[in-house]
Amino acid sequence: MSVNTAVNTGEQKRQLGGKYLTFSLAGEEYGLEILRVREIMGMMDITPVPRTPAFVMGVINLRGKVIPVTDLRRKFNMPPSERTPLTCIIVVDVGKIEMGIVVDSVSEVLDIDSANIEEAPSFGLEVNTDFILGMGKTSERVTILLSIAKVLTGEEISILSAAKEIA
Image (cartoon, rainbow, N blue to C red; front, side, top):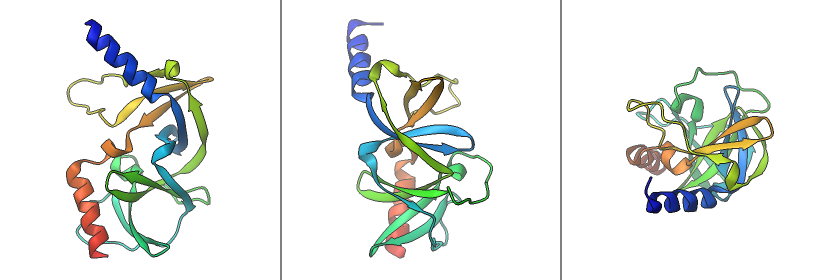
């Protein structure tokens, strides 16, 4: 590893430290940068939008603003689950649009020190882990820290923007 690489990795790691909203999805714990989170709400009526990918549930009307909603279970190719009273929508800022993501439950806000964040493990060439900021270690658990802006591709964000316009 070159000195520049070591410096860049150290700077990136320092920037990753901070507050994360943690949530559960299929029994695993994930975290989002708290500055990306706009609101947390219970499930509400979602209006389906035709001809969108399977992970796009539709749109909601949030105080007069149309917000596209995606199901992270579907996006991550996880089996569907029954909605419970804990199932909720997290409204996040993804670049130019706000979108809702459906999760099994919201846990807490964690303050994770940069020293406790490891790089995402490599699973080989076939597995894209660009959407993982890192692995946050707290107490006796590991939280997968997501870059919500990279969970969806540019094409998928365009589809969500179009769904918002259609609605």
